[in-house]
Image 1: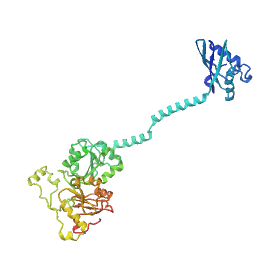
Image 2 (image 1 turned 180 degrees about the vertical axis):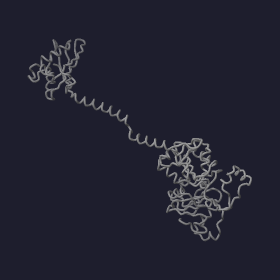
Image 3 (image 1 turned 60 degrees about the horizontal axis):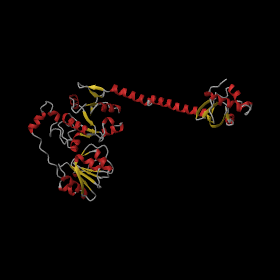
Image 4 (image 1 turned 90 degrees about the vertical axis):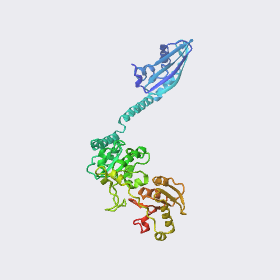
Length: 440
């Protein structure tokens, strides 16, 4: 009876060297014959092989130049002690056939260890395939449901089939973005009154919608976004402007970044004054914010364009006369603290110049920049400044940047919509010459 070597627990490997030419049967006969009775009845090789406790003895012999070398392998299902005794008994064989020979045990291997290693390697391979096949199943499922809802929510609007949210007609406010991906990102954040222009040319549908709603233009923070915004300013009615951070796109923004951009949107008149752009579209800010009275001043451009010939009539009438900037009265200036009087004096110097001045603790001008580059200039100031003086409108973004840079005073022509005044920043406008500024 022979045993299956794969059922063995150990494997004895021995090296054979013989001074002559021998064959495999010679080696097997020598092993059985010279160990018979040597190890006792319990470890007799013939009995062990019949009972299946050792497997088939495998021999590999190579004879060259009158000498033979090879290897003998004996599988064993005995315990460790019995296997070690059997291995040492092999080394007592000193003759194989007619030749002197020597058998030296090279190793006794635990087959189970190698099997375990194979199991581990195979398990790694199986697990790798399993993980690769199921990687991100939960995330993919969640994302798939979210995308499915977004696809269901996104619609096409108007004859141009523009990507839009489902609340375009119901909402009083409208957010205009550049492309379909931007619409999807806003839908992901729960904002459904959004429509895309899908290119640099503003579709007629968006132009028509802008006349009856409060419109926020929300564009990317790159050169292309600036060009599209200019196109919007020239062809449609815009109330507010929101921009993605410089170098970012609306479709890439996280929900927190997106909502922050929309919260920090800038009224159109203030944006035009800060950026230096011109708009031929209608500005629909309240009349009192534009300095117009209910019955006088410049008529609303929407009324001028209602019959399609408003701009031509305006050109025929010529531009309205420029209103001279108010000059602080000497009495009002005299009643101000010297430091504040100095700021208002500097404000008069930059009147209608679209310039911004940075003033240090000694009331000396330490820098200047165009108003449209003022925010960036403040952020990059290399010399400490105590105050900012400019001919323009104070915005929330300006106050936030001034607070971050430690600038304690802001002096400007007018005050725009401010949600929160930083405690460490004082704000003064020309109105403060006649009375205190409420809430500052």
